[in-house]
Image 1 (cartoon, rainbow, N blue to C red):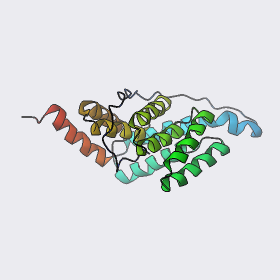
Image 2 (cartoon, helix red, strand yellow):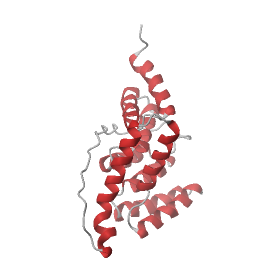
Image 3 (cartoon, rainbow, N blue to C red):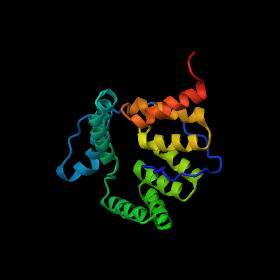
Length: 205
């Protein structure tokens, strides 16, 4: 997730990618031999799991349940399907805790080369670049995340927060509203939407 607590104003970032509607991928059951299961069946199985979780997330009215579903989604996102890539990602977690941004950026740049279709690798590098004050680089990486997974609500939160801090309030409002379409029980985002709605659209008379 893109951490934003210590954000500072940065140069004008690229325009936020327009959030896309989630496209449901229908996957047919595959017959796979034991040795082929992880390689052949995993992508379809992963997509089905995510589709089911997002459907539940959009429907639940319970905050605690929403948090549990969000956590399950993030656990799916955090696994690449490659042991090597997952080990590299774990090492970057340690580097981020140590605030070794330069080494983390180098490792994550190698990781996105190895696994260019792994949205979470791009999301993690966006976090690192944000903390290096590279807001434009962070926005570019977040655009990659959303191209791979348009429902990535943590990436959308990052985009919205960067836009808001750069006084691009109408764009930030649109992004935060999209977050709530995906994950309606995020109280902090709902508060942002309420505030930005007044700033952008004014109070109702």
